[in-house]
Length: 247
Image (cartoon, rainbow, N blue to C red; front, top):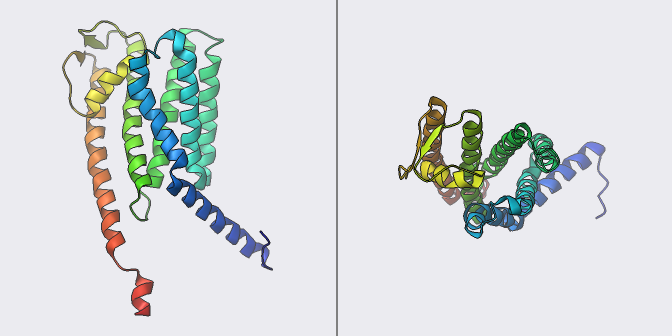
């Protein structure tokens, strides 16, 4: 594309506007977002059923997580500061995760869980920045909202794994011991939705506080999200001020 004869400042402003339009179109196309949401659903609901949480399938889990993290960070391309910061955190998380193959120690494994937790929460921030921003209600916002809800459950699952490693016997369970983080998904989503069957009970102060925080987060997230999405939908019904001026 040949740029018109503009000043350097105007060209920079034009480039920024074009980048924003491209980013908006990418978000609205839902291509990357649909892939991201599909992989999250696969991780939460399909991988445990297929037995992909077993040590022998660890490579598959790491590949899926890597793609989830990269596609999640890519959604924040429009926010330069957030994108740069999230890219750095994501790179650190991926380096630690794949380095754990060569450093199979408990300490490094704990660092892997911690970096995974941090990167998941950062992706949640990226998605929320897109979901809650001003604009019309779209299917992309709905997909992003679902993805954030699922990611919250994943984040807390890793949090429970970390607490249980640092403070053994933080949870009492009637189903046996936990051998992988994916086995925490069940407890995490039961707590997030305040379902709670009672077969897993937090018995230490830290684990109780963590479970309480997840239950509150699950309810507050839905309340705030619905209020915001309804507000965006109502605002989209109002005629534009420029249109009223022309009339």
